[in-house]
Length: 119
Image (cartoon, rainbow, N blue to C red; front, side, top):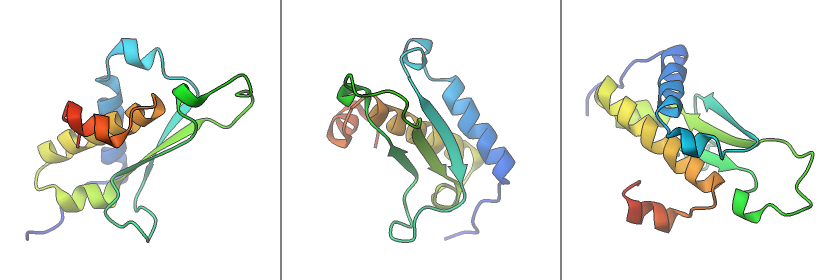
């Protein structure tokens, strides 16, 4: 086990932004009321968590859905850096995490994501 990859929060946020930029426009156009955040560490009860989606998936929004806070996607820098060996690994892992959490926004569950090849 080598040293943990060093990357500033700003650099990591940039990678998350780049991952978001690579999401196909036909998907980003459909995203509604979502904010993406970067945090250093996940909740203590899940120290290896790479990303978290909190909100109401599009598939579950009914007529009652109005005036609510944006869905929140959080990408965690610490666990991502600890599991990656190179900057390229971080780029790949960040992209998978971002896509994974956005998929939850669209109401796609983990089982379907695994079938599509997103861990």
